[in-house]
Length: 404
Ligand SMILES: NC(=O)C1=CN([C@@H]2O[C@H](COP(=O)(O)OP(=O)(O)OC[C@H]3O[C@@H](n4cnc5c(N)ncnc54)[C@H](OP(=O)(O)O)[C@@H]3O)[C@@H](O)[C@H]2O)C=CC1
Ligand SMILES: O=C(O)C1=N[C@H](C(=O)O)C[C@H](O)C1
Image (cartoon, rainbow, N blue to C red):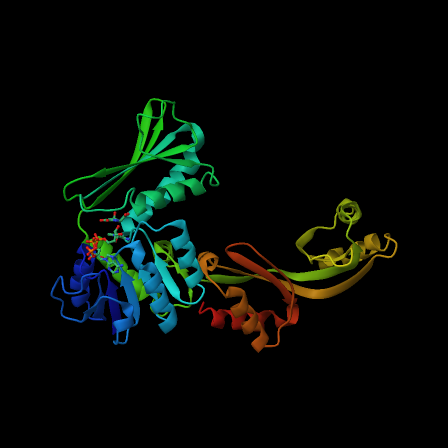
């Protein structure tokens, strides 16, 4: 049974969430927090501050206000309790605070807990990649008249997602006001907020081109979708390691590491030792290798010291003799050569939001005394070279460590 504390319990979402959890046989609400603890009758204790909570809690779910954030993070960090943050209107400073806390505890943060909106974000990004600057982009959101923040957190998250397709080159323009008398710039994403009645939450992304308009709409028909999403998020993170998680992690059923494979099984590694840290000299070495058709694979350079630098790279074993003879042409160039090397690669979409993946990888290899020779990485993959005799052992160790 997962024991939940709801922050903002007496609000609209807090009440719907507590009702949904009451129907869930694997979860129970053990306590709530709200500014006005006695404003409603709840079948569990409700406190004004976290310092009064005496119940044992497995996960905190927050639908309240940004002002509650410091206390939530302090409570969760102190007690090592995962937190699902669904509140919107966070400042950049708040977001930094969330990112910092996620180094120590699992935090799930999403401005919109519905699956549909998260798909809408992905579709909007894809459309932006396809349409580029040929279409103007505007986002229109509509919400009930009780909403205090504008624009919605979701509209901002959609804009951020779209902006990824433009490498962050778009500028957000909030509404259009009479004081600005200028044509729209192609770099703009217009973001517009409408408030009224009991609208649960509409988000429309408009791509406006010459003589054609594409619209991607999402309409929330009830607040239950957000509560169900928050419950799914709480179940997802309650036993996860520290890190910052989002709906994307759930949608793609992402594992931190989803695969491991051997790319090159008969490689050699050459380390150039103490090369003078002069760009032209280094360029000449690699130019000579290229002119002799020596194909480099993984390459890595250490930080220079005393004007010298070590550079390590892998090549196919079949190129080793030619590479040695090219290098011997450079006066005083020292190098070391290791053969029978295999390059392994691990990949996983979840890696980019995780702390400690490299530490887990090294620990898994260390348990079997497996040494690595070169390691390089991107956001979603890590490649590393090991002695070929250790290939099977390394694959087994990594498979176990990451539950593949
Ligand atoms: N991520 C998602 O999918 C969704 C996010 N939201 C977001 O969740 C938040 C709450 O929405 P909603 O329930 O509609 O809003 P409500 O105003 O109905 O509820 C918020 C509750 O939190 C209370 N509160 C205010 N300050 C604090 C505090 N410092 N500590 C604890 N409780 C506090 C409020 O008390 P009081 O009224 O006395 O101020 C109120 O009872 C909003 O930011 C909203 O945008 C909403 C729906 C979906
Ligand atoms: O306040 C709301 O109601 C909602 N807020 C979220 C937001 O600001 O994006 C999500 C949802 O649209 C409902």
